[in-house]
Image (cartoon, rainbow, N blue to C red; front, side, top):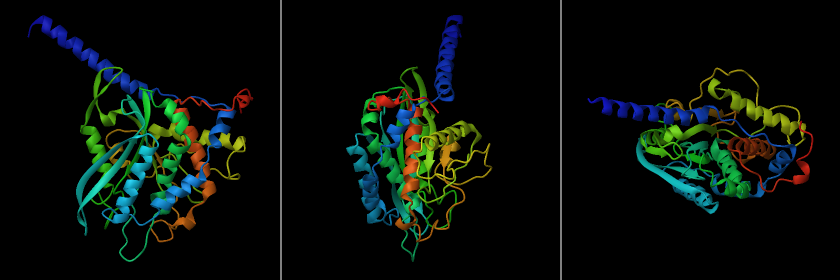
Length: 355
């Protein structure tokens, strides 16, 4: 090899290493913006219980993969996302399930700006568990998280539309299919959609526009925030991963400030438990992404409620006050993480002394 060619290849190598480290550096060094009291009040006031209940009316049904109801729920969620101005990708594939044979699964991925360099991912699953002799609608598991995510897109639409052109960082809403096992939970009978999408994203190559770096789609994910079993009274959320401990703490900080401003329904106790690390492993849709080094913030309450995987997981278990509280925390978290400019914030509230 000639000295000139050697020097040329060395330059290419250095440039590629720099670009690769630049994307990761941005992700690791990312810090949230700090909102004012007035901005907290504005975001806390963006409630739309009517729309939340409208979504539940359409998805709170037995929706086992392969059923007519499942197809109806799939169409409803994807249609609502498109109505709200999101780019919708359907990750459709087939897999074999015990006792059911070959089934078609459809992950729904809503993306605010598909051309962005990085993404915060908010996710849940939309299928319901199969029971042979019981009617199971899965309210907290996970119709409520689905409704919360669509409600978030609805109430933040004006601010998200302004933010949409941001090419550095954007938001994805992922509705996984086939989270539930058909027979017995195991590596081949569970999280069908998450396993497929994580593999697909790890194999799909793309370019970081600002650096020219060639990466996989999965490398562009800053963090996956997974919602599961949300919506009942007295939920407690622990930190499961040291790598995302600061973001669990951020959720707790937001909750504390909302309490100080008297903006939460739950007055006496806390949702987010401040512990250094909860040493427990819960199998869920995040696992295939965790195995591929995606940072995970798992919002699943511990302990599980007694209604979990029973017919009692229906509309009666839903505590709308708790849902509203979690909506407020999530809205503020997303706006702070994504650095969304709030165009309609109450200006008179901004000069208030910060808590």
